[in-house]
Length: 276
Image (cartoon, rainbow, N blue to C red; front, side):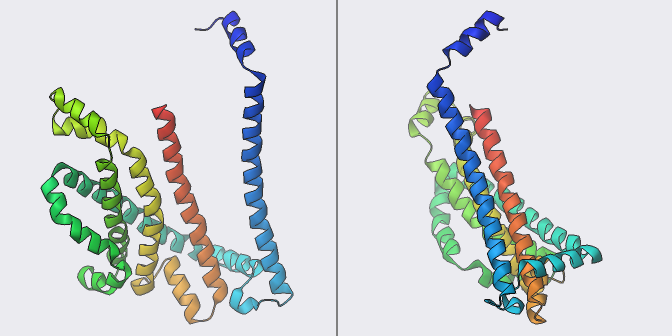
């Protein structure tokens, strides 16, 4: 425990320049947040104004007031929460499964150099293939329903996770691995003590990428087979020319995707604090 004298000495040793630097950092962070919010409100205001002045056609481009009315209507009939929950559920399941399975395959490929040599060209081909083109095939294989949508989201993030995580595994410092081998460490110990801890930033980066990819997979799947969800609302709104419904669904998607991304960023900050 620190006594009062020690605490006073620590405070006295804190330089005035350091305090100024901390103050500038906080001011800069506050300025960044204020600027972000200002840009958003200015965009919304200009969008609304352009619609009011008929610079844009509100029927085609919609406008914030019309989006808000649509959002209120969806809230009152309860469909807002149902469609949002369905799409979010499908995305989270596809996101988690794609990340876990992709990381598992990456571990197996790191473990076996032979397996890496065999699978590498296939992964390159699958990664370059437009995965949304496989949507109709997945529907035939899995069936027209929620499982097909989840598989679509899983498949899109699966290959990217394998390539990204495996790349992180292979970039781990070879000297550390050789040192452990010198002391007789097993491959499992090398994996758990060095490779996985060193690759956590890579895995988190894969998570950030998978957030967007999972949403793409789910929305494409809902475009094809869904009878509920935000993707269904977008397709339905386009078919009946309710473009306010389309814009409202897109904005909801953007908000939820941003929240999901912030959740991954929160995990990253927690890991960095724990590592320090």
